[in-house]
Amino acid sequence: MKRRQLVRSTAGGLAALSLAPPLAGLLPHRLFGGDGSAASSQAWAAEGEAFDRSVVLERARALAQQDFAWPEPPLTDQLKNLGYSDYQGIRFRSPEAIWTDAHGRFSIDLFHSGFIFNVPVEIFSVEDGQARKIVYSPELFTFQDMTPPSADDPMEFAGFRARTPLNDPEVMDEFLVFAGASYFRAIGRGQNYGLSARGLAISTAEPEGEEFPFFRSFWLERPDSDVLVVHALLDSPSCSGAYRFSIRPGDNTVMDVEATLFTRKEIQRVGLAPLTSMYLYSPKDGRPLDDFRPAIHDSDGLSIWNGRGEWIWRPLNNPRELQISAFLDTSPRGFGLMQRERRFSEHEDLEALYHKRPSLWIEPIGDWQNGAVVLIEIPTAEEIHDNIVCFWRPSGTWKAAGEYTLTYRMYWGEQINERMARMRVINTLTGRGTQENWRRYIIDFAPPADAAPLEGEITVAAHATHGTLFNVIAHPNPEIGGTRVNVEYEPGDTPTAELRVDLLADGEPVGETWIYRWTS
Image (tube, rainbow, N blue to C red):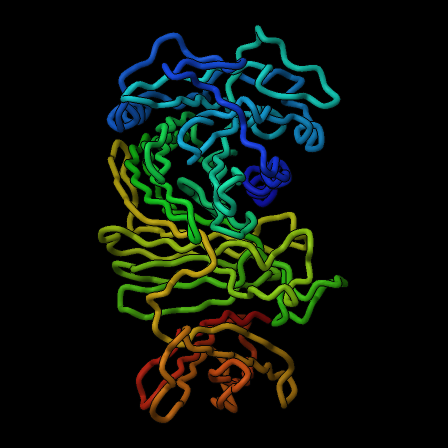
């Protein structure tokens, strides 16, 4: 299975299952009695064990000191050979959901192993400082058109999803999924799943091939507030890690991530806070496919707030050949893959609802020092493949037997980056220029909500690493209450170039810096 197929399979491949309509108005019945004992067919480990974050840290540290081995038990041949449709037919029984009496804040569904989800995942529920393992039973699931596994087969789960009254106080809406390698996804209020995140990326798009770390165990703290806390044990041939996610669902679902990584061997190219998305085309690409939809994408641009205080907007592309861009930086303030086009008319898709896909913003906590925001764009002809990857790559090499920590905040939602007071790029259009072999770019800048009108003379600073720019003009765009910039580009004989446009008022930057990669 190719990298793009694996990315989409492990993250988006579960989409059809995880996006199955919830049972509207129906809350799963109680699993616990007043003494916390399990009811229904849910089985729990007879003995609990003391738990705090140090348990995951010590397990990760111990793993890194051992030779790597895949977790056990392996899948049965029946489950390993399931097709996608057959796997979709395995459904978790809603009445078995965990914590259905936890003050109505959260409940947890479990995913069955099978298909490409072949790494056994241990899941524990933590209450009063005690962790109790949730024991697999086929009675937790329904099986359409297949014989259920034997109760005697040793099995673990593939992951979990979480529900909360996100949109309606009477409905437990799904808002969070952890399943497949180290992939996870979340949404804010009124949204549908789109892009994914990962715990860690190693050697992405490198000749030696990508390594996919995976979560092998989860500890879910039974909530006593509006915060869901998830601990995860990560493992891979190169490293292990202890993660703590503090998750607050809402208009934007916010996650605080604390991670400690322990290396087994040297890692030359590590990606921190990696994001994975899909971009097929948008109006700037001229609708290259014979499709009724004007645009197809989970995300349409990369946003960066760098250590110098600059805001950068890089429109995404679906290139003819793999493209890797690195935005060098020191002490980054944030970056993310954004879905800015929110009009239904821009997508015209009543099934995928691309206009309701979340943006995802990463905010480092602490100094991430030197490195680069890396953007990888992979050619694809179909929307079923995730072809966009983005992460922070720290400078230097991670040494063997090392310990590395990082902390960051994630915002999943529609209205994020409110602190950016500058004009935002809301549209990029392109077409043939006024001369042969010229390319014309139209860039629309719109002010933030309730922003004061720009004062001073509005001008444009434009630059190309190769080739020549012509007819660089800024003029008002009353339709958006902002400014439209016109740029024409003559590439000459260069195969690739970086174009940059800055909007200025009285010589000072007042908008995002627009950066675009041109290729022949």
